Length: 158
Image (cartoon, rainbow, N blue to C red; front, top):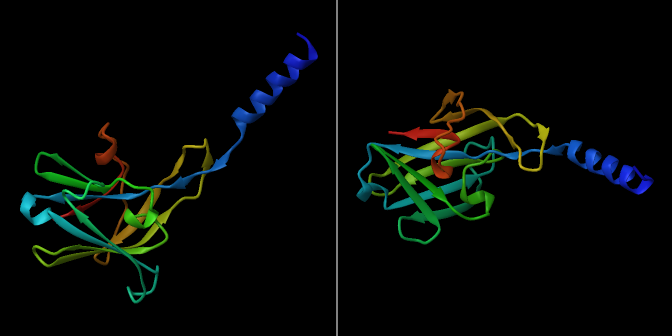
């Protein structure tokens, strides 16, 4: 093996062994036993964390036919996700959240999302270890349904 090929091989090995900070995982919403008419519009609000919902950061209106929202129905459960790159349009660590369902005037609060900070490949995600839903601490497990919009850490809304 010549010197050029040797250094190329060493460089490839080094690049493949490099660790990167993992990105945040999101918390996905699953609405259980809601008729479609109640979920045609959802309001998602991001708040400054650990501030008792005093400082609103962003609001997004999620509608069934808005062109960016994905509604996936599995049995009696509707999963709703926003398909865009704005981290304030999906539930991620770093903010507290309120999910408002206008048709039934129901609000669900999500706060204190904690996750591990890991390193790995360029596509790795930090696991979520806990979050509060309406004041109750939950320890979610990752659900792999083999479908992108129904896999992940789930907040179940009844």
